[in-house]
Image 1 (cartoon, helix red, strand yellow):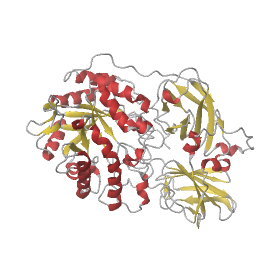
Image 2 (cartoon, one colour; image 1 turned 30 degrees about the vertical axis):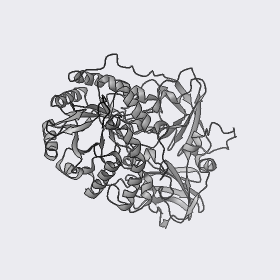
Image 3 (tube, rainbow, N blue to C red; image 1 turned 180 degrees about the vertical axis):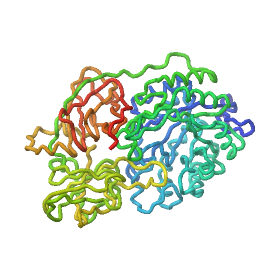
Image 4 (spheres, rainbow, N blue to C red; image 1 turned 90 degrees about the vertical axis):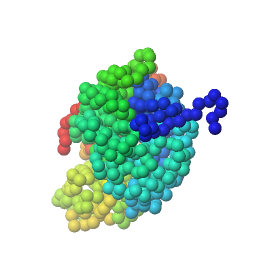
Length: 612
């Protein structure tokens, strides 16, 4: 019972009048998607304020399970993972929240948000009523959903609705028992009055397999769709209630080797206006995309930037598209008074010259793999080694003399995803999933064979999300099966976060053959403080492919030879205004002779070069 004079908060569906009701009044949301996991915590408030000043009254938020439970039973909700702090900032800003806690989220995020430790069960059927999967989901939701409950609007918070799973109709399993289990979990932890919904693509098959009685069915579609037809399809599954486009695409994602995706401002404005005129509730995906820092990109061909051609850029800057969207929204609701917050300041810190850190394979394993190797007759996967991201080193020896180039073959396409092969420290070439399954090597019996395997990101959509990494099957050298491996889990991030290599005592580097400039090597440098800690963009001109850390933070992958992305976003809060700033580069194939990198004051996301 409500206290005298105190309004009872409510959010519900009015099936009679085809709308949402907020505190018993008709309500239409105009929302935008923002991913806290892709934006430094320091900037959350800035981005939310810009969304509010555009005229949005809600934001839509994914919760990536693997971002919070990286190892089974070990939970992290601190710092950039502080979900409740994000919800509180949105609440303070005046924004309602549409929460999408999964357990699967897609989002072009590593394994669609599912934690890779699930794959330790080799026969697990993800996103189904598989017993092992359901137990893991139930354990996770028993931690997450009690944190969410106080933030429900009906409990005085700002979460108005909660999505169950995500676009489940596009998954092959079509397992209604799984969806019923999720529904039971959500109702148990969040109560009977919470608005639960599903989102599916605009096809009959997707809507059939993704919807469930008791969960409000919504659709998603972009600017190239017939709006009336899309909402007619929603009506076939929800004859009454509000029209909802849960993902209206303001842009699109980028792949290595393709052009930077664009969706015109004119198309976005036109279709948004038409949907709002119909009284539809719209969430714009994305409103700000952000960045796939570290190893969080999904699938092995998604770039580091998640700019998405969104109304707010990767760096959170207002665009012409945002201003046009604000002009559309003005026609339907009052816009907050006051100016739009400006773009964050940018600075071109200029060139920094790096130097090589010893030979990658020979000198660094005691630092990068302090636990030493695991010995195995046959290769083990990342998952079997309980290392889920980044890089692992597989080491064996040549079983015989190879005076002539001899094929090294991955006969079952078992390299996931790229393998950099060296013999006695000399780089010999590359094996790559799906595209390069054979290469030649030479050497002598007993020579050390080092194979550095890179996990490029797990598949995040479709039937192949059970995406194991490493050497999944034997490698064949001529007529020999390579065996007797030493396998090193490489904690490159841990070493660099701890200050290495910059903190290491200066040591004289042994003379190295010229060939060691090719293949995997680490490079380091510093640039002096100049009193500023402003956003900047790192360009690695003529570098080939690799990973970059600034002051211990993993900025993500670079691959300018493939494009389109040529710069990495460096958030200003990473930089020190009064101490030297450290940069560490893992170059995997070949560094340029000049060893320079450039810090620019603007991004370059649209240059495609060699697609080989």
